Length: 524
Image (cartoon, rainbow, N blue to C red; front, top):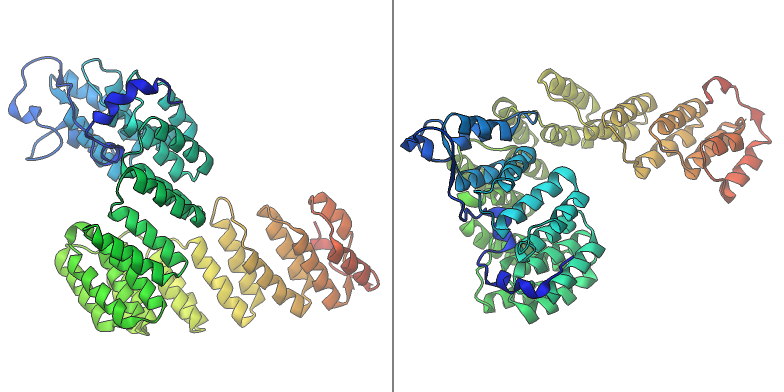
């Protein structure tokens, strides 16, 4: 994969990293592409600054995926205007932030075939990242193998490594990391942070100390490294090690960021060390500014976890004074925090504000209040709230129907349970089986000996592509409770390609001595 390693010595002299390649696209050389007549000042300026028509604005305005970025660029050129590389790089960066990867990729591909556009490794690294997002890992690997001579260096290797990490491909990431080390591409901290992220997301926490040890041989940890390390400590609830890691960070004269303080605060709260938590939370709040907006939601949640309602309201007031409009994440944090602090009426007021101000119709916000009503056994209020959601144009999600299913399981209203469970499954393209809710529903049916509903439930599960030995055993236990003998169970299990186990055999033997059931019409 990384052939001609000796030729890559020049790569080490590049000042930009793969992180820069993926976050700040280097403009590099390549001048401008120009066709036709003269160019005035307005048309020579790219996507930012001032008013007027620019190539950047035209590309950003391509809202619909079916529209072509290439057609837009070519039309711009046909009008006799200039296209500069930095303008296109800026547009790619903005489109990537907006997650409009298709158009961003089209721009990269157009630049790649232009002889007058001098592309750097950072450009190819970003191109590879977009290929992975739009076409998948295999296409990204093919793109990497086909890179021009001299472009398979640290930035593009790091971009491929990033792709493997995002897709949780440990074996491929480790193999690439080994080759990068052989070629001297692991002097940059980014590759190690990628591997730490991978092992944390995969739950391979035992590999983290080895990565950190190797990291320290080749380079120095940065704040991201320490934050990832603290995350591991938090997941293990290892407060002692976390404090040692934080001390190392301070000794290295690295400035902790809001993530550092947030992780420590959570760990202190988890261990009932509220005074220490208040200290780190205060430090976090001092360092939170407009540029790291996501931190405000974390502040609200942490104040709520400390039982500090005044703190919650203070941060909310600060968000309102800092930003013109609150986003859904902030509304969710505020509503969830008020509910945690038994402020249902206040949460309802914030929700009403969100309803009129947001316009996203994100059911995750609504589900917070719905869950609160269900947890208080207010099922009538929950039903009314569901009607309100629909009236306001908010589409119920799988979680919406799942919450109602659990609520009616508590009240043992089996008709409502079956209705909302079926709606939950129908609300998604492919249902991810939830053993817990299936067991709970069958437990309810077994207790009542409700064989007709149990058979209907089996059909619903079969239609969702989920039939197991335990499901059939639950069905048999329901028949046993009802004192009835089921029909051709072994044959039905064979048709469903489900194995009989010891429990199945015993249950079939037990129920075979009972009266024949009277529900053949619903047996499929």
